[in-house]
Image (cartoon, rainbow, N blue to C red; front, side, top):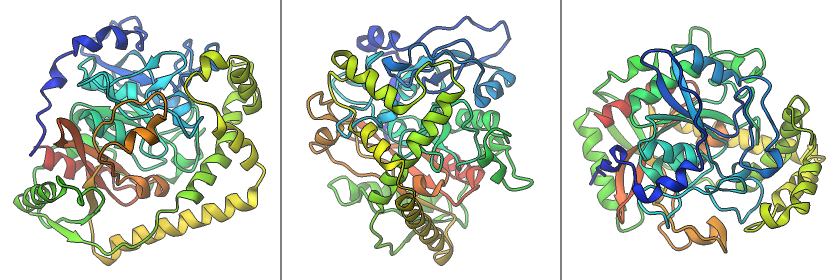
Length: 439
């Protein structure tokens, strides 16, 4: 049964005071018909602090706008404010709590403040789901747009890596990082992606965009059919008591729109250890490259670690910084990095071969399990052991593939999104499929 997202139109009063502390209101533009947008606080806005949610970066005042901010301003968007995020985008501790930062505390789910909105783009997702804005910008390395979008019941788009510049964004891993829109509808997500995409001389990855690539994503939102389209079924999430009914609904809806669900044979093991090492290795190098040109006086990961230790009562009251230590250790092991990167590349090649083998237009599946109760003692990992947990975005993340999630189901009253994942640079196509399903 599809989830009715009535809450999108109403501000959750019990949540208002807490969320206001997470948003810094900026002066309103004098332009007519501007689109209000919220920006995740790991993206540079000139004259404003870019903190990644950390007290260590409260003085990191951006010298210039990130490339995507310039694109937004040029396309009649008004930046309403910045949103809270999981501190350091959930890349400080293995026991981290999604939505919590040492600057702004805990972002909570708009349906129930005891529940977690997922992360790391938690504030961006909740700003939309609570009705503060219709659109926000998040960032993703692996699941940080699609998970919170699914968990709070909005549309989230992780574009092909390289479609949107990462210039002016605090990084985790250059091989997987991207920014993307999170909104109330496929249409406004497409409109925003169209605005922020484009080649940037300061992000070499954007040069991978194919010649004559069609960025008219708004055009794709007119689509109302899936005639002749083939979708490979991602099985995660269909093995619980809700899964059979969910699958019936997906098969019915795809068939009614003229498409076909294809059962694919994929027995691979997810290369989680190799992916983790790649992220660890790239994090220190990417972060220090960002800090080199930033106004922040601390220029190294070690200096950030030292700050956290000195200010541990405030910064590490709930969890530590073991990932930071591991990143320093991993950053000197280039051989292991290259081996791990090769494993990920092989895995992505296998993903693309599945598309070819089964003549698929995209993969389809459930995005992520429902919201969990925030656990301040054991973090996300322990909390998710107590709920139905599944996910289907990992291969899209390591392959840099486009991934869109739209609200579709509910479990125990909490949203569960439906994911469409395509081959590289098929962003317009998966937007068109999502639009048909949304209609």
